[in-house]
Image (cartoon, rainbow, N blue to C red; front, side, top):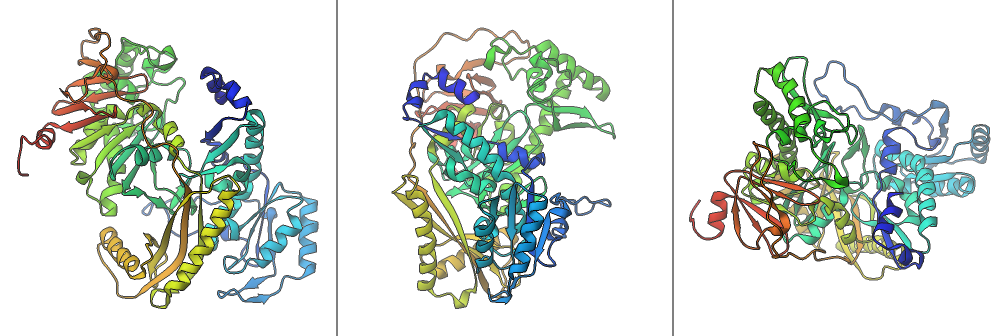
Length: 626
């Protein structure tokens, strides 16, 4: 409904009805269905003896030292698991033939308890998927069928099985949702965002439903890469309930080690870490009598106490109001006015329990929230061999600007950036997203056995498959980014290395990455596990939508909060002029807190650049040396 309200508000109804729009849709339908266990009724078909693989999972666990560890596995009804007497060996040779009797028995069992979808995961199907394809031809007309050889054609029957099962269970739900939406906007086109940051035509989304699972935060990262002139960015997108952090070094980091609710999602996705810290994170006293912030959230309703919508518990937003970092003399979106008295009351309850003043308590709440976010930023940088001080910290989302300076200080960073339109940056990123495909082929060769021409031929085959699919969507001009999945012989985990038509350079890059991440190298030899190609169309949006303006607006009214600091409206900032903190900058979509010791400058792009005072002077040539 929000889509149609937005079209009406923008006056785009007529263009939509005339088929002149392309709507790029970021959806959490797949994510919510997976988290809440609301997928379609799904039957799982596997090799004989492997029916419990998805229930057993891997032996590694998130809480390594817990005395009562919990394991997250797929909740599959055992009666919906069907084992078939068929087997291929590790070379792909057929050693046990699937006979007709077994297929008929499966057909009868499914007819007695019909599922909505069928997930088929047979060993070594990524080498030869003849049996999987035969089963799809047999059952495809009756059920939504997902094949492991199409969803995730790689080694690892557990991860492949999880991806295939999720794809099957989510496919019918995605198909219904997008079919309904497409019918209402027809003849205009509908595309959806994938976890990889590429878009996909709606009519193909259901068959790749698992690729939508982690697509929610992707838009902001695409905008950061496409619209900001920097190859070294650390980003954080802070909303009401959670914060998403990521690192851009020359390009977006793509990972195959993502998780959702404890389950491995081995589909290529932009490497984003999500933590339970946001503007609505609740502050409370834990069992030990100490202050705790998050992961519980007040949500949008009742929301923070200062929203005056029924919330009474103190949140990070309430703490920022008490500290005078949020304007209370002008409305937020939807004409929402903040109530400072409600914020003070909520924080005072905690302050009494802690024997602290409200200001000290509010500062403690913000400090704890900042430390949670800083730890996530350390994880994506320091733990992966990157020095945060060599990067610019970029924030978007409505709440990020309030925490930018303190986060940068905790990470030893000297420069930060708040993009123009920061509050709608993720939506802006979707306009910069390109249609594309990310395809993988298992190869499993020792590095010394790799033949350059053979590798080129295999990559060309993948590229041709991707280009054919994109051509059907009207995409002709494409860029190609080949990637190697490499590891040392004897290891199980791989590192992704870009391949620029030079085998030895790719192998050397792996050694460098391994040294940076793990602090050592091995002499056991390398193994090329898989080839991956990212084939994408040409970006449609490369410049900011809103140019910077030097037009002065009306003077800012004096603040009514006695603890408040000077305020300035974003649009009234003068280009190139340095503004010293403390101050807050307000906009319709966000609010920025400039801490004492920091300097702000509005760039010609409309973005705000914040620098620690010493760093600002050095950048202008007033200071020399380190």
